Length: 255
Image (tube, rainbow, N blue to C red; front, side, top):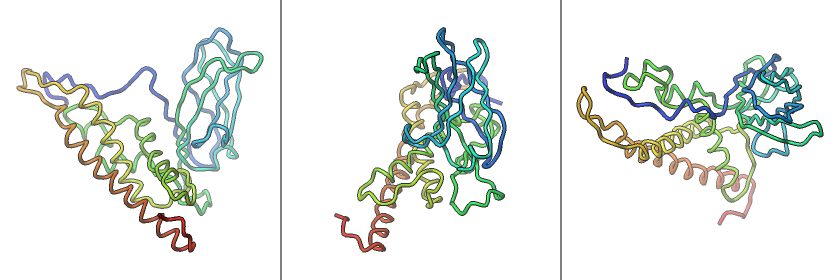
């Protein structure tokens, strides 16, 4: 239970927050997303991709039905790549023009029966276990999860993007095959702590309640410090790993 007089609310749920869809590798089924209202709607299109919208992993179309959420039927051929993907929902008019869109996330979780030799992605569950944010009862001050799923996935993607954008440009990874899991996990936690520290700082206000003086948002300083330590350690590790890769290849691009 929350503390009496403690009216703290984490920065979610938000009406426009992205949905996070969880499905398993090589599975088939139907997924539903929130409706996008538009007078000219004729078709819904779902594009699932990594970081480049022009390189979709799969695309599914379904009819636009006013007043009803879009439902997409997917097959095992669509879900053979485990990873953390952007799921872009479009509304198309009768001529095929995009008239509205919304961003969501798709987590395709690797299974032991998939027969893949790839490393596979981190999971939201792994990150929550590291943060001790697995259920509302663990956060007795707020009675809720501290980090929404869409923020967890966003911060899971960021370390992979940092790797891909750090020079020298060596092998490009996705969340499907990034091999440095422990380093990836630590960096994800760091980005989450820095992200929510910004929110704590913006809403920091000491106030009085029947339970006493409340200054819960003051933890932004600790979150920011610890988060930046983890991010800096990750960026240093990226430099070390890329240097090692260059040495193995006999490269000379390291400056």
